[in-house]
Image (cartoon, rainbow, N blue to C red):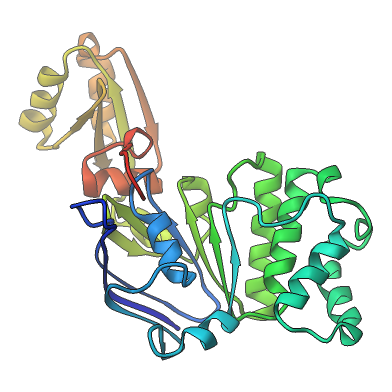
Length: 312
């Protein structure tokens, strides 16, 4: 189990904390996605979870090993995949794995079976003697994962693993993460700004401006919204919001010329708007709730429109 309690972190050059009183738990064998817009705090949290930054305030423990007291043991229990590639593209797949093994003090005479198992798991057996620079981004990510799993860590921590990958490669990456969970009970922590990645997690922790907005399973968080989400583009935002409030007691939220409202079980409202109030509407869409809608509900901001300078 991973337990984080009241983690706060401040960079020396900033008056505003990058993280503020963050608390959550992740059970063994879960995939937990940390979803946040740029500047939301996910990168700082990743650095703390991967022991690259110290715990300034609060507590962090892995399987009841306190971060401050057992950092060496924690580092042996985790595998880390950084957003920036940590492979040497001038070396072959096998050479990259051997270099990683040396860092962990493996006896190279006994390494053959371990490498065989790893390359089989990640489908790399036909590429062992190819240089990384000749492989696609998806295959390079496989090598990153293989390196991180070489010492059989119980916990895998990945920072924005889908960055730079096409849709097919991202789907493949998540296939391997789920395989590690199902076959080896690996607990996986994934930071991401991609809603579709977070949707695949067992649990999601949503951050914004260094604060924890909400956490839970994606399905539970979406069910709490319920019903459909109506998005109406209009040049008469104030009139539209007054209509929704006065006639149906619904509170719409305006963002960039679009009013979003949780319709719930009141589907007749959609027909009424399109029939009787067409002059207020430029366009309208209806969709099932997504994690972006969860973010919107709790912050009042569109996820993709939230940007912020400085460290995240």
